[in-house]
Length: 176
Image 1 (cartoon, rainbow, N blue to C red):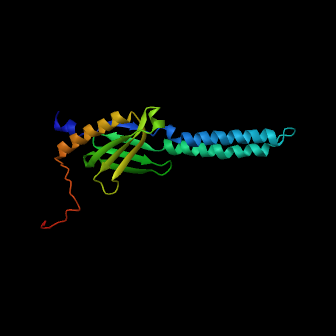
Image 2: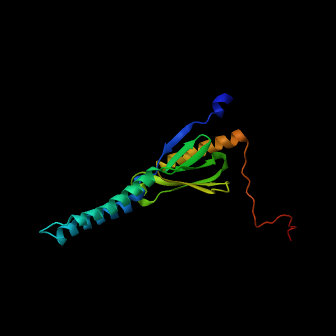
């Protein structure tokens, strides 16, 4: 591979968290909407009261807000960086250089495992974001392996080595 191809950053994966993270909220909103519907028919069976139906706005807006919030969270993994972008109108992007990642772990809660998703936790040497979490991503184990592969390539390319220092050892101690 020539150096020009090696230096070009390419996209490895792009995605959003699974909406299954909102399952509890969606379920609760559905129950709330059903209760409002039952109250509508039980409260005034002879003369329906349309004002009760306006209460349906609450669970609808709540569920829609959670859906939009999850949809506006975007992950992007390139051959050099991991990026997390949040926001609907104003955006905030947080990124971490792959060569700074020290450790990887995959957390697969039961509900996410049922739909083939999991959380990837990247522990890094970055002081601003020591733990970079990709929540509810599909094929989490495969993606973690891809990130690890590109992390090792970036470390080799930059000549980076990880040095563990024990803070309890103290500097300049004579050791008795």
